[in-house]
Every structure is written in structure tokens, then in C-alpha cells.
Length: 409
Image (cartoon, rainbow, N blue to C red; front, side, top):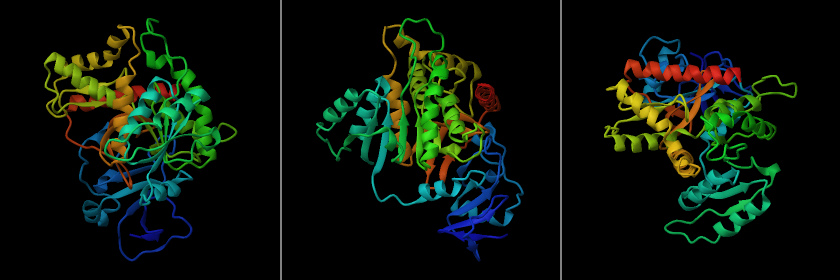
């Protein structure tokens, strides 16, 4: 098997192209990168693997299962991958190697974060990151309301630290939004007011928020952004897909693969669904000690009492309660934004940067499916475990529902 060395990476071709300055390598070494070339509109871009067979599997809900062991075209590297891990890089994206280098580079400086939108969710998220973000070197904020920006800059720079230095809050301009490691997007348009009677508040926001996001996706493309675009405003999962697609459109509106890689766009809405499922299970006397949530933030969610010992009826009731838990707060006359801002955004994003398991929507077969992952220097690593067949079928159905919505929208 031909191997090449490039900027400290060991490259193994499986249909993908080498960079022109790659040179031959005598033996495999870490980090090992399998180069593929797959449909950029419907395939992943950069992800970590621990078993060789993960490189070749279909992009369905089956990636949540322990990988099947079989014969593969790269069989001589099986033991090396099992011992050292590896990643898959889709060279159909023009920025593939730039993102690989950025993500694997050893961090020497604290992270710079840009937060777009200082509404209810954005303001709450900012407070949490100010107090808890010990990894963050700067919290950059942007909102069309200049007074709101100045207010947060003044007040949050007057907060005393507890047990670690607090990141400074600075106001940034629109042309420097992507001068950061993570961009957190919480801005939203057309949130239905409390008492409006809208059945699905999240989907009601889709068209207006998608239109607003187009300019930000175009900016990410123009600035050759190689960090993470964290989509937080609703509906999280379809909008994450929209950001990816819009960033990859040229001036003629054609998809060209010259924008963000799929894994650069992550949707943060599932964390609060896990928290709500735990709360509802506690109220209803359901054992959720080994519970899981999958799928989108809202309709289509899958809450499971246990991944292997799955009780379909119990899980269906729990899912129903979890999906509508936000309506209990709205019925009291309040917008339910505190738990989402803290669980889906602050806690999940800090878990991501700390290399801990976190809930987020990431690409799978061209749609963004929520599940638990862990971020590594070689890309996101999927949590894999045995799943009851009925649960696996339900998750795949949720993925296909998202696919039908996102691809038709």
C-alpha cells in the first residue's frame, strides 16, 4: 500500500488526491489519514475512526453501532488503526487539508470565540461562557444593537473571578466575525410570541432564519474559515445543513465544495433534549440512568430509556413528553430559553472544547443528525454501542425524515 508523508501526517490514498508536495513514506505512522473522494453534498468531510472498517461504511444510522469487522481494501493497516486510530479526509472539498492542519495543530493560545446575537439565548450563553469558560481567551460579541453590545461589554468586564481568570468580552465588527476559533450563532428572526398558538415554534422560524444565515455562510466562505460554525438558533438541525450548503455555493449559486467542510458546521440543540428527557423521566418514574437521545431538536426526536434494553412504549411516551416540555414553560407566559442556552449551547460547547462527550448534530448522509460524539484532533469521533433493532430503525427513520425536509427545502 502506497503511503506518503505531508506536514507530519501519514497519508493513505483510497480514491482521494495527495497534496502536490507530499513525499513517499516507508511505513505507517501517526497521525494516519485515509484520503477519499466522495460526493461532497452527501458525504462527510473529516472524521476520526478507531477501527479500519469505519472508513468504508455507509452513512446511515448504522454508524451508531459497533463497526462490523470484515475484509477491506486497506487490510494491511487494520492492526495499526486499532492500536493508533486514524481519520478519513474527503479531498472533494478544496479546504480539506487546511481544516485538517488547523484542527490537529497543538493549541498554544486560549480559544477565541465570536458570539453572534445577544437576544435571550445569546445573552444567557454569554453569561455562562464568561463564568465557566476557563479555556477561552476572548469572548467577541456582535449584534446589530450596538447599545446591547456595549452594555454586555461594560457589565461582563466588571465581574469578579471565582477560581480561574475570566475571558474578556470585546465587541467585534462584522468584517472580523470569523477571526476566531468558534463562531456561535444564536441570532434569530420571527420567534412566535408566547400565546401565538403556533404548534411548532422551531419550524416556524426556519425560512426567515435560513435567509438571514446566507450572508454569514458566504462570509465564512470568503474568509476561508477553518474553525467551527456552531449553529444554535432554531430549527438547529435543518439550519446547520443550510449553513453548510450555502457556504459551498459559488456566485452562480452552484454547489462547488469550496466552502465549509460538513463537520465544521455543528448544530447545538440536543443537549437540552437530553436534560428534558431526564427531568421528564424522573417525574414519571422512568429509569433513565442509561438513557439516550438522538435526532433533531424538536419533532422527530428519539428518546430511549436504554440503547440495548429498549422499551418502545415507554420510550415513545418519554419522547412525547420531552418534545413538548418547552410548551409547559410557554403556558406559564415565558419563553423557554434558559435551559437551551445552558444545556444545548454552553455545557455542550465547553464539553466539545475539553474533548469530553457532547451532544450535537453532525453530518450523516447529507443531513445533520443529533447524537453523542467526542471531538478529537482528527475530527469528531462517534459514540458507538449496541442498539436494539427497533431503536436503530427509529433513529434511521428520523434521519430520513430530516433528509426529506432539508433536501426539499
